[in-house]
Length: 226
Image (cartoon, rainbow, N blue to C red; front, side):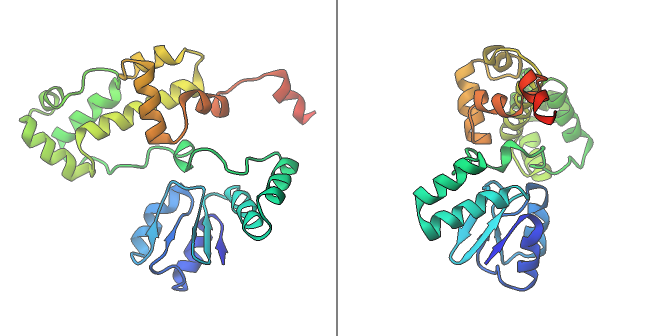
């Protein structure tokens, strides 16, 4: 039994996903988890197998799932042959997080926390230690730590890191700046720190992310549609 994208909602409504780990499109994971608490929703994998139930992320992830079914039924060599003909990865590197927008936190509910969040987004590469953020919020560091985590669901340090990763993602996709320059500008200090953090958060290296998402108008891409 399989589902593609939001098809997981149909299986969940029928009670077929209770007690199982599944995935769906990254923009629907919170809703699926909220409406069906008996289902374990994992928002990052391209597809998930739990026993006889397979689920996939977005629509095109259904192709990844189909290749996995071919491999499960007929073996790796047959699946590799199919993947080559379809010009696909047999195992796509990374997860959904490399495609998603920032939906990983709630919105701040009070002005002090809102001020701290605004400072982070205004300049992700600036100093954002708990003391710096507390000064923006007008609270003690301990008080801000507690309120920030309660309102946004993540501690300040984790939030800063995620905002910096988002800034680096945009820079990699929209500019030709070297990774070292992007690392310094986004607050990582060194390219190696950016690489480690990016791989942990996004699932791919910064250079691989740029290769996939960097906007170019090369002759090779423009000629495809002719």
